[in-house]
Length: 160
Image (cartoon, rainbow, N blue to C red; front, top):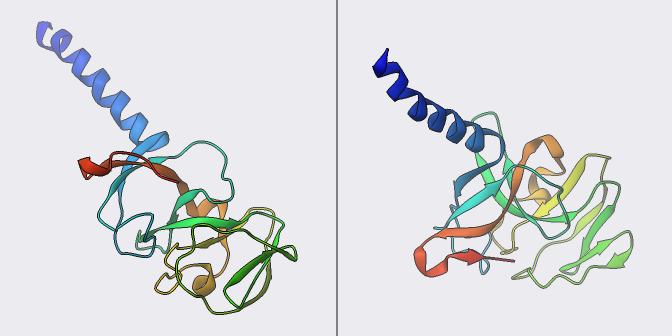
């Protein structure tokens, strides 16, 4: 009985940690250089599983049933029409001021997003595999937003 009483605080801590990682926030590792120059590809960031998704947020997208994830930037929001022409992005016919894009990109015909769909791009437009390749992303496929680097320690802090 005394052993059980001594274990209760540890059990509570484990349950709380599992709850937080499952439903609120968890670490995520960046692989590859598709978000360069914003991210180099070796960072560990915090993934926020709660909250709204806005234009230019960095999100983690579940790519397939094998649990492959990609880190990309939200460009198009639900209900919008996205078009890329001569490396310029147009949202509903208006040119988007995009300070994050690096490198030229090929043209993409107009794509209209549904009520729970997003258009995502990597910042390194030359090498990124993103909505230009795999198309629209549903809200369900977005696992959360991330903007805080935990590692490497020299880069700790918020990124845009």
